[in-house]
Amino acid sequence: MTEAATAQTYLTQLSERIGALFVANTEAIAQAVEAVEATARNDGLVYIFGTGHSHLLAEEAHYRAGGLALTVPILATATMLHEGAIASTAFERMSGIVGPIFDRYPIGAKDVLFVVSNSGVNAAPVEAARIGKERGATVIAITSEAYSWEAAKGRTRLAEVADIVLDNGAPAGDATVAVPGSELRVGPVSTSIGAALMNAVLAEVASRLQASGAGAPIYLSANMPGAAENNAALIAKYRPRNPHL
Image 1: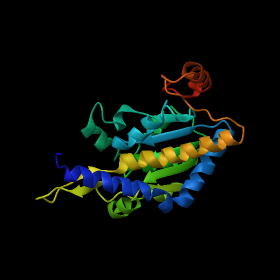
Image 2: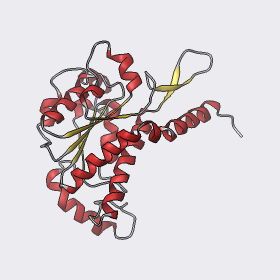
Image 3: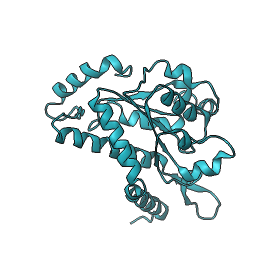
């Protein structure tokens, strides 16, 4: 068997971090579930915004097998990675870029806005949270409290603006495993943990909706029986309000 000590260490640490999420976020998860459930019952939408790698969580929830159809990703090329990672890193630190992006999305008082930012101090996610609150939405941050405290240096933290804060527990710099013989570290965890936190909230909401008889708008994998009919009905309902369907 090939030895893979670093791989094993990373997966072990990631598993331990994910396993500790519920205890560390019990109250925040409960609050997030209540907010999303209220949005679902009021026919609102759950918007998700992030920049750089954090935008992956918006795509994670979008049109997802086993996911809620009321989720809407907020996507703009300037804040993503695929057409210019270096530029996106610069843009996410600039004030004023989020307003024009959010003009495309009619976020309102019935809605929830997830804002994802591991460091929690860049201008774009903080601005996004402020816009969400100005429009009356409930703003839920997925961030690292430890990283944001270390990185803030006088700047406003996303955690200070959001209504609810889900702490991913990631260390400053995100990487968790030391590279032997150097001072380098590898093994980022924020994406995996952030997706786990978000999906935990959405799964609990789906369970509660279904148990109450309200019915949960859940996409099925295209290869599952009944998927075509189920998904077509959901698309017909949400496509007029989701520009990415």
